[in-house]
Each structure stands twice: as C-alpha cells, then as structure tokens.
Length: 270
Image 1 (tube, rainbow, N blue to C red):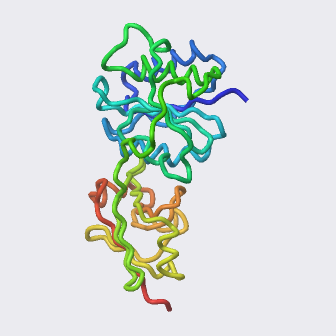
Image 2 (cartoon, rainbow, N blue to C red):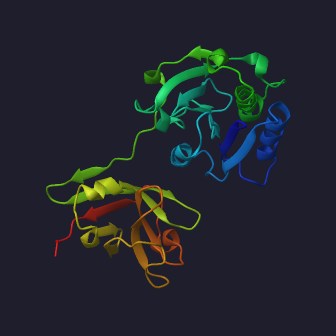
C-alpha cells in the first residue's frame, strides 16, 4: 500500500497555497497518496483544526502521515513537531494543533524538527508549510526514520490547548457544555459525548437540551426525523451531541457561534 499524506490547513482555496503543497509532495514523494481533509479551517483557528484532525485520524491506516498547517506563529521561534501517535505521524507547529495526540493512551514519540538539509531554499519566513513541513512529510513517505528529523521532545513540554470545560452533575441530572464546532451545514457539535448522556440517564428520549432560548426534548435518530425547519438534537457521527435543523441551518436560525453554552437536563422517566 502506498504511503498516505493528509492535508489540513486554513489556506482556503482561492490562493495557490494548497496546490503548491501538493506540487512539492508530488515532486518529492510521487508514490504517496495525498488526501485533502480540510482547507477551510477559519483563519488561525487552531482549536478547530485540532478537532477535525482528531475526528478524522482514527479512520486512516497505520503509517499515515498527517500534515496540519494552521500556523499563526510562522516565522517566530515556535517549534515544528513530528509526533507519532496511534501508529500514525502528525506534523505541525507546536501551538496546540496536535493536542489530541498527546494523550497518554495515544502518544508514542515526539521530535522537534531540525533537519535543514531537507528544507527548500531560500527558506521563507511566512510559508514553513511549503518550505519545511511538506518536504519533511515527503521524506517520511520515502522511508526516512522519524528519529532522524531532529531532537527528542518531552510530551510534558509541548503546547496543549485547554479542553472546553464540561460539567456533569449526575446527582441533579445536569450537564453543562459548549458548542465546539459548527459544520458546513450549520449543525452545532457540542463537547457533550454520547457516553456523558448515557451516564446521566437510561432514557435519552426524556432529556431536555437548552441553547439560548431554544429547548429540545429527546434525541432524534436522524437529521430528517422532524419536519423541515424544526430544531432537533441527536448524536452525530463523531459521537457528540449535536443541535440541527431539518433541511435548515441551525447556526443561522439559532444565532449560534462556537463557545455558546449548551445544557442537558435529565427528564423524568415515564
């Protein structure tokens, strides 16, 4: 099986940036299969990039190389990292974008990238994704050993994003969380996981979900479970509680943004 390199960036699609990364990978590792995960991360939104990469990585085979470039500190003294976790390799800046893969149950190894012989020249101070990370990804796809890319890093010294606070009160039957992602369809993903709800009640049909002035009772099975325009709650494909509108845009209709509070209350079991 040829090596796989995925790309996750905030570059958008109106400039040449994504195509240039593909060009370098095609030239230096033509045997590698390249997969675009997402290039429409909101500019400089490290947390959203980390969330999407965490959601996608479990579906890739061992040995996959993930190139994550959301790098508002490009050109500064921030480090660039190569992390091995889940049997895969993740490349990106040390700004928290690789936080999901620093958990003890996933993490295997980390290297601070320092291999100038691989970099493109002249080295730009504004496009390390092109001049450093893409060539390093190509080298890994060509069989270069991770340990040869730089110096060993201690997981404890790497930058980690703070997790959105989730408060669970099982005695009184409440969960307080937040919207952590809004997808292309306007669906609101919260940080309340299916297992959190399962620990709260054995009757998910009775729970009440609150967002601003909106209240929803029970969990739907699908986005189309209710008539058009109706607000519903369900467990999305990532395993988290979502708020959606049947054939509509929940973010627009509810006036929602990332970090909005969402509350779940246990209902009475009938």
